[in-house]
Image 1: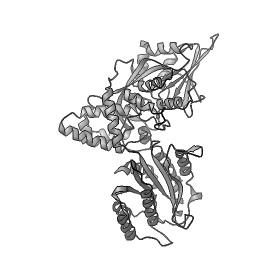
Image 2 (image 1 turned 120 degrees about the vertical axis):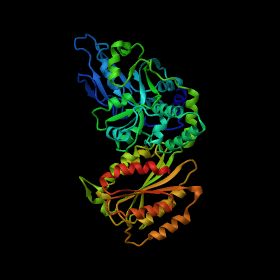
Image 3 (image 1 turned 135 degrees about the horizontal axis):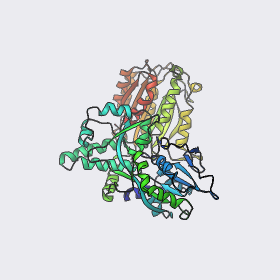
Image 4 (image 1 turned 180 degrees about the vertical axis):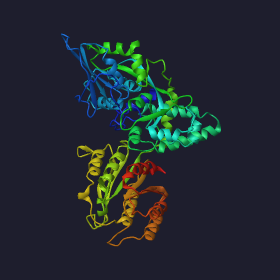
Length: 536
């Protein structure tokens, strides 16, 4: 995993701002403690939103020590179970924290107050060591095979009649909807892509198939594949068997398959953090994790004890994969345009349309990596300062950009959360807004980015102030289209009043695509599908 380590090292060079979107294996569905005991759950210091489970020391000890372990969320429940058999005079606090978050904390000079780290790949530890952090990478305590996972009911529906271990060619031919993360920061994605390339073979026909697959996966990748599954998107994503096991009992239970020939595996090393080599309880926990008695706990959590099942990694193949990926996956420049006309106050179920939209947009924002550039407009008649049908709420900027002490991502999240009934008024000035947004994104166009507009409305063009007709809008879009500054137009309709045929005609005039959720409560899934389609 040398190339992955090199990529993670970019954090230290401020080549790319990373904010903890450790996709695929770490961030989501951490699950419950599998032991029969009920250790206390606490909020530890210096771990942001991470949660911790405490295994208390025996009350009879004369002296009690404390050890904090940062563990990849999929393995954290197993570490909690095994820690109960480690040093009885040490209180172990197991913090389920994404591996990339730990690297980012060190990079920002905010080294976590912990003694032990069990990341989802030795590459993360290698990155810290190569950057000069005095960490001690010890033995691999467990491995977990990479699987292709989906929400359980969708998994069962999709795999019905399929072989238990289908070939990669079977999966591609069947059109199984696979979405991956970034192989530069997600080892599960790296393992999956390498396995797919190998599993499809090396014939001329296979080479074409591999290239087409890579293009599709790269152009529809997401910052956090498991978050996309949790949002309701019907997809398969690469993760570990440990993560599938940890999802049991959560709101999004997963099921996974292993392609014939496998999809690789991830190794979880025992890393002693700076200054903790001689800390009481640290060596004892390592011994407990490596003891034969721990094997049953690892197996129950979807892991194999030790490194016997580790998959050898070809560093040159990883480097070639990442070079290919960078060429296929340019970052996004996206303008989100939201209907805030009075009809968005209508209730669907327990929430208003604008509340449903706000929640869907919040989930969608989480799917974009930090190198994406996003902005936000709202539209209804007479919304702008000079009577325009649109208003710029947040200019298009890179999500990691600092804006007066906060990030663009935080500004976007706050603005999206503020879309509510107090914000809605007026009629639906749709056509003028579409043209204005299109022209704006042409002006904002930058080389190396994929530019797009995602506009959501709950009605037809109803511009009481006049404005463009459909025919005039289509003619204007055709006139200003510029293949040198391509902007993809994605239109989303929600509710029964949408003219889906009209949306489709306008979107196609700009080389785009339209989506409709007749039931507004379905907008979350449709919104995320539309985001995935922004690259064409």
